[in-house]
Length: 148
Figure 1: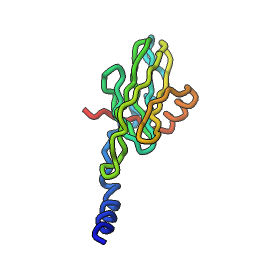
Figure 2: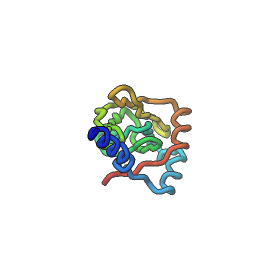
Figure 3: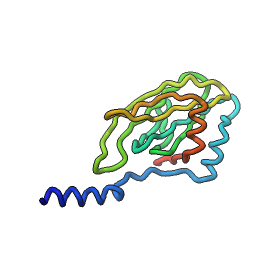
């Protein structure tokens, strides 16, 4: 009986134990949705998924943290770039590491590219997605902030 009470108490705490993920200002979010990289550069958008939190870096540089309906972006030089997500689930009680995953993007000057954090059993792989799918998802999402 004590175990049941303990589990009930923990389950009621779960929403309060969510991990905080910063969001960018509405002005930055709106500006990011213009889908126009600086001249001669490429822009990579990285999209979140459900209850997965991802610390995102591009070529070893922290870009930000995303979760659920969020995204971050990076303006890069044309060429090959490696996107890395270190992921976990979104509560401290049921949470746990989902590991690290990578996606390679062949960035083209003056173009936008999209990568989505997905979810499978005990892992959160990154997947390059089409421009149509990516734009649609970014327009519905909110720009994530940095943790610094």
